[in-house]
Image 1: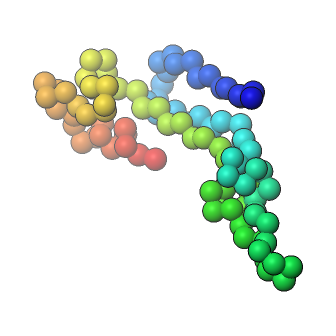
Image 2: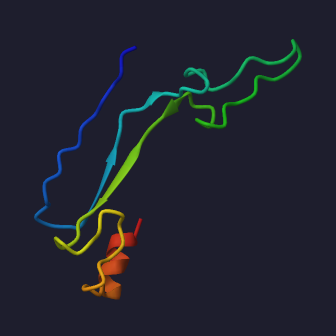
Length: 95
């Protein structure tokens, strides 16, 4: 089975600390790209796929927040030796 892959190359920006990347839409694996399922009976409405909201496609959104080096653990919590100020916290967590 083939697999589509997309790659993001990370390079620190000259300005800004947040980036948003959107993948190409991909076929919903739950409904097979139809957006709905086969009705149970001839008079039934086709149930909409809740996984893709009936669109037949899914898309990944990747948010990247840039922070000073050596200030964050791999799991995303600030290190004990660095107190993040409120202004920086708001910039990092704004969506």
